[in-house]
Length: 331
Image (cartoon, rainbow, N blue to C red):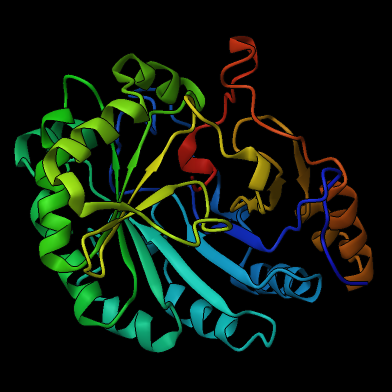
């Protein structure tokens, strides 16, 4: 029993795994300012349960896993979990998304354990703007975390910047200069209406076409469309000159990336989320804790993939935007 193919003939090879919904930051477009209900720890899948589920996904053809949160580094025991995953024979690519606040002390060990690359959220290089976006976050440890990841040999290190008009859009060029100086890739991301916080965040919406216009003005002929972009995920990539740095733009609203979607998401409480922008989800935790065999859980997974929708509906029906918080989905 191998291969995960959805109703639209997309081969699912990528699983994003949220290990916690908790985060040491509270970015306003990710979490609501009030009323956030954390899941009880007993609701989370144990690392043993997560390892089992991920093993079953790899046996079904998934070979790429990204650990997310919340902030994955706030969950204790993560390093040992990474070592368990690295031992899975079908897993070829293990990566992580992080805000990097805790990364400087852990990057070397994580790289040695098997995390080959990392995506880091960094929306501003201005300490005051950074503090406003993250709600009292501290920029300095994040910058140290980025440098530590690069020094540990993680490659690529990708910086993700959610561009918000009137708030951080004045840093589009300076963020690129920062990334190029360090040899890190950079992705600019449009705001997305996911959860109450994300919906309010679209008040700052800036379309990808404007971001690209700014980049082209800043770099001129040094901004070159990257070859081999197919299958590279939701971003459209450009090469910066003849150097190693790539810059991408993720246009979730203005130009959706659903046709090539090859991913599903597993929440910390064991829900399989089929689309970032829709409410569809299937519990895998129920089967795990009711004693299902491996084959029975695989059947649940296959049945779920058969229900994966064609695309999100951010643009088509505002009443159908996802009401789940981004922090519980892992982005």
